Figure 1 (tube, one colour):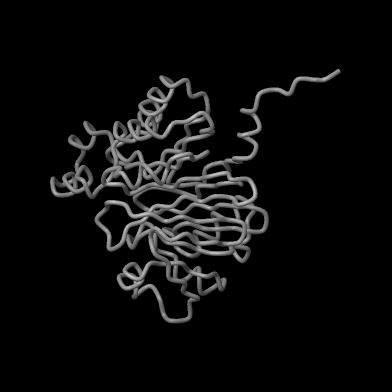
Figure 2 (cartoon, helix red, strand yellow):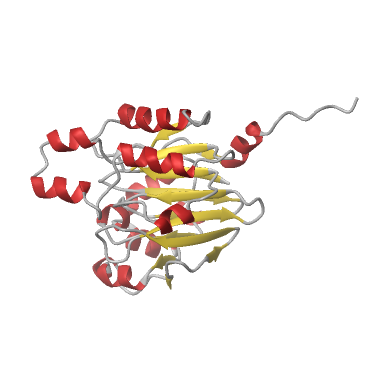
Length: 273
């Protein structure tokens, strides 16, 4: 299974998951044209996308969903509350598929398990995606006001974690955002801080965790080097030696090949001769 974060931040989010001929796009927070450009930059044709799944109704996750789904005939997966809130982005020509949190979806070679999160959206979800053939598991968890027991349970055993590390608590206090925005971001229905992301990453660490990608960083209240240092330093205390990458807003992150990373972690085979 190969995973590419096409971009992440307050201006847009989208992640591509590939397994054989199955190509799943999670969220479409960029314009339809920008999504096509970002896919082309990683040598993926927009028309090859098998499905588009939206986690919640905020514009940085939904902006291009209607245009993209209509232009390329891609099935668009939404919960009913999210569909209702996003009605103005739809015109009836989309191939809509309703899903519910806590009910698994089979999309080609992948099994998608959505689960409810705490965020100020109509029906906020995060997902894990498992490749049926190998059992390789990806967790995508951004827009987390706080890591609930449901979130912690769902993300157990992931080989790759795409985890929100939105803000530094000091930078958030000192930035130019209005106080109301600061309160929303730092509140229980807002976003995870670097410190909270590090604590969650430590809790989710296990011996087969291959890579961590930090996502949804605030441009005004965070610094990518600081976020990586906070989470990376915490994980190093558990002797984690895998990569800690930071997803950028302006361009796709290099693809993460979970299969290749798992193979590198395997102990060398002893020769019988």
